[in-house]
Image 1: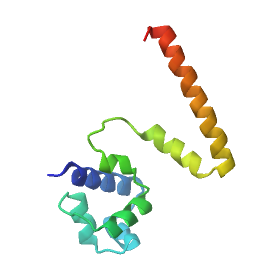
Image 2: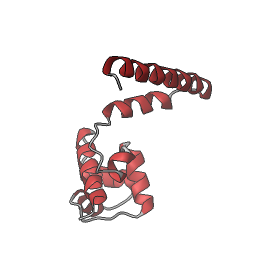
Image 3: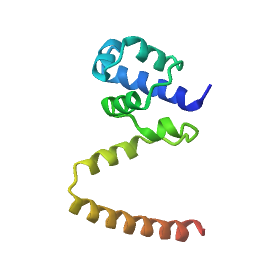
Image 4: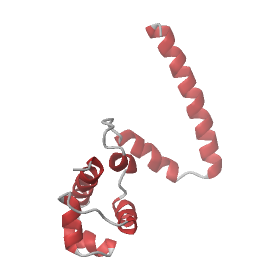
Length: 117
């Protein structure tokens, strides 16, 4: 079975439950029948692009978990950072980007000093 289909099913099921939504309630929000949600969660559904987009937006699903299931990294902190950036103005994002680049450069240099890389 396709890993992306499995990842989508797991993400939908887990997130739906975490948001205390029934399959029926989610189906209503997405504009599909309950059977569609059941099939997706059981990894037997392959939703059309429009349904996938609506699911992703409704549940705020992390796309990289669905499209890159082979990556085992925990993305929770990245989700938090992305949500914080969503609330920033363009001006704030430019400043934050500059700070992040500078901080990453500094941290990489510290790694080299401490670990001899």
